[in-house]
Length: 99
Image 1: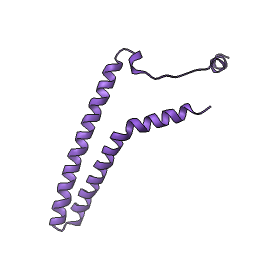
Image 2: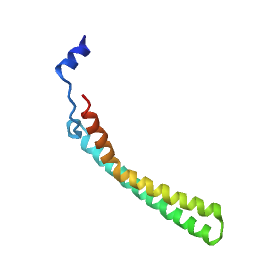
Image 3: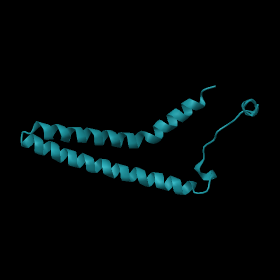
Image 4: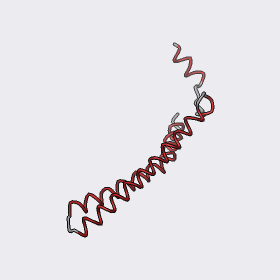
């Protein structure tokens, strides 16, 4: 009965981090975590590139493969970190279009 009354009245959602106490702090923390994640992706890429180069120079296929995989995974992680806000916004707006 209560649910049908809520549905009939039209429930809306307008996300805004400024409406709750600590919203600005949460946004700053999210930005900081994103920065740290990008730094870690860069470190992973550098370590992977070094392992790839050493493995290729030493003709060690396993080490070269692991280095190449680390470079690719680190690059993919950086791509996802950068695209995360757009991906979340895309799905949020797609969900708002559902009637």
